[in-house]
Image (tube, rainbow, N blue to C red):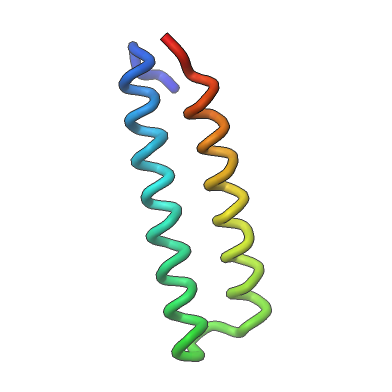
Length: 64
């Protein structure tokens, strides 16, 4: 949140949201190939969904 303008803040929050989705995808793959324990992977996937919703809320609140 140290960026100067709202556009920069929205951009970097969007990048963070994309990164969160990438982590979620990797967790799903790890779960599917049985690299991760089902309960642990499910918990982490749920956490990434919550983080994504939080980032969406921040993006929507930032206005010029």
